[in-house]
Image 1: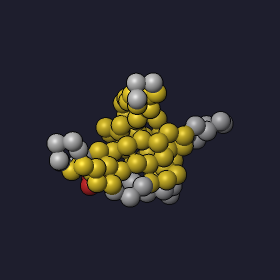
Image 2 (image 1 turned 90 degrees about the vertical axis):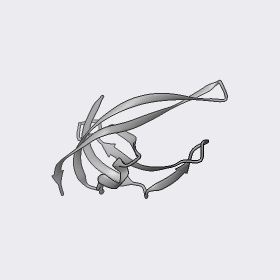
Image 3 (image 1 turned 180 degrees about the vertical axis):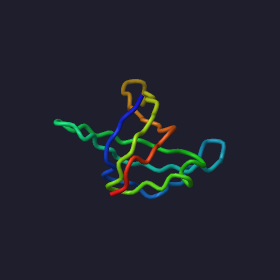
Image 4 (image 1 turned 135 degrees about the vertical axis):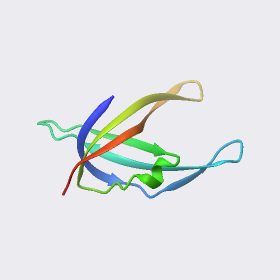
Length: 92
């Protein structure tokens, strides 16, 4: 999947401890499309890519991502957008 737009929010880097006691790095950002009716999407960057992504608010970017539905208590599902490619289109 693909989305183009402006970064409106970027989280700090988070350290997540896994069940097998490994530490993974995670960063989140929100992108808003530049359409007549703007849409927004919060996406995640995981692992070593967190250190390689210099995301900042007001950047125009193109994000390729995969959607994952994660079950919670067998009843609810939460969607996660995991970015695998981010291209800086223009820095404002």
